[in-house]
Amino acid sequence: MKSKCRILMVITILAVSLAACSPAAEESTGDQVNLILAAYTTPREAYGEIIPLFQAYWLEETGQQVTFEESYLGSGAQSRAIVEGFEADVVALSLEADVNRIQNAGLITHDWKTVENQGIVTTSIVSLAVREGNPKRISDWADLTQEGLEILTPNPNTSGGAMWNVLAIYGAALRGEIDGVPADDADAAFTFLTQVLQNVSVMDKAARDSILNFEMGIGDLAITYENEILVGRQSGQSYERVIPSSTILIQNPVAVVDASVEKHGTRELAEAFVDFLFTPEAQEIFAQYGLRVVNQAIAADTEAEYPPVNDLFTVDYFGGWEVIMEEIFGENGIYNQAISLAQGDAQ
Amino acid sequence: MNPAVIQGGRKTELSKWCLRVPALLYVTLMILVPLIVIVEDGFREGLSGLVHQISLPIAQHAILLTLWTAGLMTLINAIMGLATAYVLVRYEFPGKRLLNAIVDLPLSIPTLVTGVMLVMLYGPQSALGAFLSERIGLNIIFAPPGIVVALLFISFPFVVRTIQPVLMNLDLSQEEAAATLGAKPWYTFRSVVLPTLLPPLLSGSLLSFSRAVGEFGAVVIVAGNIPLKTQTAAVYVLGAVESENRLGASAVSLLLLTIAIVILMTANGIQKAWEKRYEN
Figure (cartoon, rainbow over the protein chains, first blue to last red):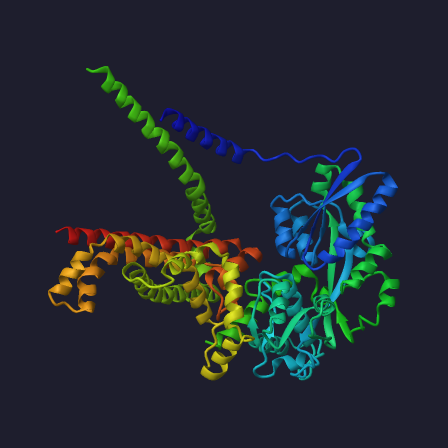
């Protein structure tokens, strides 16, 4: 009885003390160095090929063996994890707003836009995936409001990809690039966005979930990253890509996290890795995985696969991410008003 | 005084505490503290901030959808769970042991898998789903019926498993006596069996309701998640967390928590009153 009691006590004390202390981070020393990469999910396969190239490069340059710890999560979730204490050395995220969050938390202290191409390592565009043979005859945004069409797009509250989608639709409408919607008419653009949202039948929590549902045969059309469509087609999917005449350029940033590299002593390594992502070797691999690359020469080589867009705009058209988060995705923002109007009638 | 008695007294005193302290500490650390964090966070901007978050149309709709789908599920589950338990205890038939084992299966399948399974079965791309949708006009997946079906699946064991042991202990001779006295089977069931089964039926049903209100994994796959249409409270909470609206997440969570507490306490009260009535 007594010994049982003691065991219980000991277990309790152990459990409490275990919870109280956290393991200390190891410093990188000697011939073995470690780099923690936190990325969004889309470029996972590309990093799987780029990392071995970088390891070989670094071994040759410095004689050090680099081991990688890789984490792939939704861009927003990844960014929040870092703010809450995940010590990633390098982040590769879907949108700038997610890097800004880390910066605002004081973990990135340098101007991360000073590296090549302002820290944007790959790009893509918002495109449409349609069924084989395009049975609904979708050629541009204006076709998305036809009666009874079933559209898949993720939820902007949980998905960076969904934000890009909303920005693409609203931006194209505002720029007067959609038939029947006059340029610079905010009310008309809002109405158009509402009409498209009325046809949305499923809102998944991430872009990947959305395209997987589409692959299961659900919906007539998915609004998504161009690279998701290209990678899907590479793996044998039969859906087709439709590039709208006007769409937004998705810009994916990379950055070194100062707080982490200071703690791990990996600044030099982390900066070298970021620089390496801009080399032709790395850019070529990104291009193989459906991404529009920023290296001019490689981009020119792959132009057949990545046709130019008639009217391509960036987040700057809206005044940058700060403005977008407030005016479009804020509590009383354009998106919330549009979805309320679109789905409120349905009841 | 006899020394042995004193020693014995001390011993019980000590062992009493050595079990209580770890148990209470455990409950505090693992359950109470996380709950307090939610409550504190929900009131971060006072009562008005909390009420504002709950009364946003999208949040309100999500809460109502969650409550009515869980409520409908509980009603169906209560009736069918009772029937299943009765059949499993009172009748013999081939495959009974297998059926008995299958009852618990929903608890060990990840609910996300449950969702995927249901989409494959009832989704618009499946033969069954297409038939139901085109011929009968009933959409299950990406509509509220899908939520109810998913909740039924995941909470099926709760009613069956709370009723089964009570039914097993129920003296068969009472039913036989009633039958010999000429009572019809349904009358026997209603006046002899049902009164004893009501408390476990009630607690099993409420347990399944509480479980269903918080369900995320299966629902996020089958519901369609469209705000103001098919988005449930748990999915809304995820959206709120992910879009930096922690207050909204805590406020809605807190409301669901309060509903669960009120329901569990009501169930307790009813059960106490019932026991009192049947003691006399």
